[in-house]
Length: 107
Image 1 (cartoon, rainbow, N blue to C red):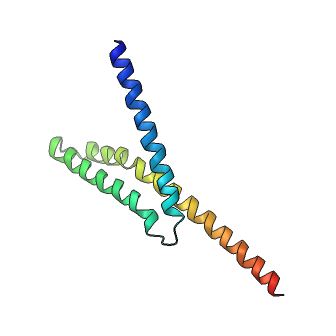
Image 2 (image 1 turned 90 degrees about the horizontal axis):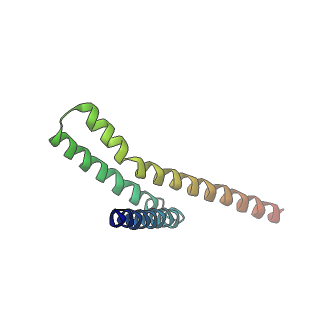
Image 3 (image 1 turned 135 degrees about the vertical axis):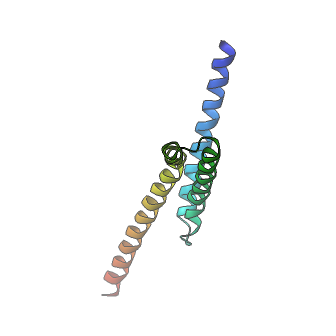
């Protein structure tokens, strides 16, 4: 029993590290000048969700199972998109503040 618990703990820690790393990578990519870089990770996760849903379709074939599976598999993409829009929105707000400061200095 202790082997199973230690394995679960190891897999959980690895999963947490990968999740944290993907969030940090998403923040980094979202801060880049090109808005398309921030959409790469969500696109990859949505592609994986489609592939997983296709696999469910081949295995089960019930529409409710396929839709539920797609929704569950799309959760990482949704989280990454939320991070993307939060970072881009914050950058846009900072950009407007900088323009205001420049306009005030021009006066």
